Amino acid sequence: MTTHRRAVLAGGAAASLVAATKARAADEGPIVATRYGRVRGAEVEGIKVFKGVRYGADTAPRRFRPALPPKPWPDVVDALAYGPASPQAKTQENTSEDCLFLNVWTPGLDGRKRPVMVYVHGGAHANGSGSDPLYDGVRLARRGDVVVVTVNHRLNVFGYAYLAELGGPDLADSGNVGNLDLVMALEWVRDNIAAFGGDPGNVTAFGQSGGGAKVVTMMAMPAARGLFHKAATMSGQHVTAMGPIHATIRAKAFMERLGLRPDQVDVLRTLPAPQLVEALKTPDPLESKGSILFWSVMDGGVLPRHPFYPDAPRESAHIPMIIGNTHDETRAFLGGDPRNFTLTWDELPQRLAPELVLDVAPRRVIARYRELYPHYTPSEVFFAATTAGRSWPGHLIQAEQRARIGAPAWMYQLDFGSPIDGGKLRAFHGFDIALVFDNLDKPGSKTGTGPAARKVAHQMSEAFLAFARTGDPNCAVIPAWSKYTLPRRSTLVFDETSAMVDDPRKEERELFSMAPFLKEGT
Image (cartoon, rainbow, N blue to C red):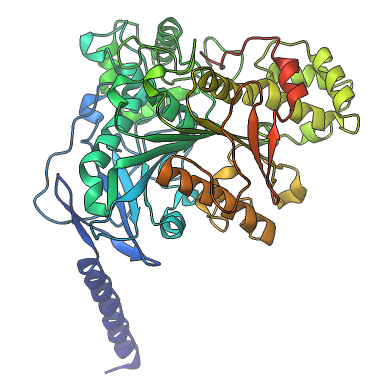
C-alpha cells in the first residue's frame, strides 16, 4: 500500500470518526416533546439549547395573511441550527418566507417553573432575526436560572403591508401579521415552555428598538392579552402606529414600483420574494428621506388603538414595565458620517434641521444648548439635540402616560459608553443589548470586556433578571430603583457607578416639550 493511499484511508477513517462522534452527540442531545413533535437540542456550557424550533407553518402560501400552526411531525427533529430569517434587505443569513422559528435556552428540563424571558429583536420592523450573537441566551439563562426565548417573525412588506383597502376581506389583518406571528410565538410559549423548564404564568416580553416597539404595540392588542405578564423596552419608543390612510398610500407606492395597479393585489401575493425585497428600495412616498416604511398599523381590528396615544392602554396597566433609553441614541444612526464629527457652528443649523422629529427652530435649539453646555462642540450639540429631539421623546411619553394612570413603570438611562473607536459613539442606540444579555465578547458588541463594562453588565442583567422573577427590577447590585412618577420623574442612570436621578436632562426635555411628538412615518 502506498504512503499516499494509507494517508487517504487514514484521513477517511478520521473523517468517519468525526462524523460518527457528531452523530452520537446529536443522538444523545436533550429531547423535549412539544405539542407538534419532539425536538433534539444540544448542551452549551451547562445550558440546554434548542435552535430553530418551528412554531408556525410556512407563510409563503399565506402571504399577507395570519399564519397557521405547524403540522405535527412524527420523528425527532434536530433543533441544532437557527431557522431562516424573514426576507429582508440587510442580512448575511439565510432568509425565507418559511421563517416562523424560535430558539430556547434553558438551565434544565426538570419540571421547575423558571421565569421566561422572550426577546423580540430590533431592526425597525424591516430587518433582523432572533439569531444575532448578541442575543445568545446562554449567559442570561445561567446567571439568572431563567428560560430565554428569541423569535423570528415576518418583517417589512411581508409582515406589515396594509392591503385591507386594496384586497379582499382575507387581507383585513395584513398590516399586522408580523405582530400576529409574535402572538403565535407567545402562544407556543404558553403551551410548550413548561416542558423546557419554564413557567408559562411568568413570561416577560422584552425587546430593543423595533422589538421594543412591537412589545408596546402588543400591550394594546387584544390577541396578546394574557400571553405575557411583564414588559421591558430598550429604546423602543413607539407611541403611535401607522394610520390606515398613510399605510394604504405606501402599499400603492410599493405596488407601483413593481409595475402593479392597486387592484392587482392577487399578483402581489404570488411574485417571487426576492422581487419584493428588491422593491423595498422604493423611496417613501410620505417621508422626505429613506426607503419605504412598513410597520404596525392601527387597523381597527388587530390593533384597535395607538400603543400610547391618547394615553397608556388601560387593559395592560397591570403589567409592570421597564422603559429604557441610551444617552447618545443617534450616534448609532448619524455617527457613520465622518462629517458629523467635524461640524462648524455655521454648518450646524442646516445639518440639524432634517434630523429633528420635533419641529423646533434649529437656531433656537442650538442657542439653548450653548447656554446649557458651553463646553460642547458643534458636533456634540448635533448628537445631543438629535437624540433629545428625535429618539428620546417617545420613551418619556410612555413613562409619563403610565404614570398618569398609576401603572407601574421603572425608567432607566444608560450613560456608560463604548470605549471602542476612541469613545466617539458613547452610549449609542443598541449599546445596552450586550450589557443586558451579558454578552460583552460576542460579535457586534462594542462594550469591550474591561472591568467597567463587566460592572455595568452585571448591574443591567441582574436588574432585568430580578424584574423577570418578581415584576420589580430592584436587586442588591443597583441603587434602590424608584418607580417613575410625576412630577418627580425618577430615573436610574446606569454607569460604572449607577445612581438615581430625578428628571435627568430636564432642560433638554423642556426645550423640546413645546412641540408635539409624532413618530416618523406615522
